[in-house]
Length: 195
Image (cartoon, rainbow, N blue to C red; front, side, top):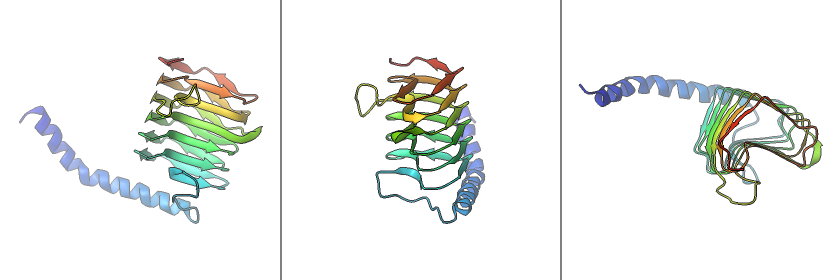
C-alpha cells in the first residue's frame, strides 16, 4: 500500500470521530449562546456575528470560508481565544464599538482584506488586548491605500494593546493604527509586509 492510500485510509477512520467532535463543539457553542443566536444581522455581518453582548466567549472554534467577515462583534466585550479563523472574504475578526475584548492565542490566516480589525464609529476608549496571535497571508482584495491588507488594523480605538503577535505576509502593514490614541505595539514579530 502506498503512502497516499495509507493517508486516505487513516482519514476515513478518523472522519466519524472528527465529525462527532465538530458536532459536539457546535452543540456546546449553541448552548453557550442562549438568547444570543449566531445569525445574520441587519448589516453585512459575519459568519459568526454578535451584537450588544456583554461578554462573548468564543474558544477553541474553527471559523472557515466566510463570505464576508469570519467573526463580527458589535458593541461587545469578552474573549476570543485558541480559535482558528481562515478564508474570510473580507476580515478575519472585525470588532466595532466594543470594549475590553481579549483576542488571544488565535490563528487568523488567508483573509481577503484584514486579519484583526478593532474599529470605532467615533474616537473612544476601547481597551482591547490582542495577544500571542498568529496572523498571516492577509490580502487587500478591496484595494485602497492602506485601509485593507493589514494584519491588525486599529481605527479610532483608544487604549488598545497589541503584543507578542507573529504577523507575516500582509499586503500592506503588519500593524496599523489610524486615529487611535494610547495604542501600544509591544514585542510583535512582523515579517514580509508590503508597506
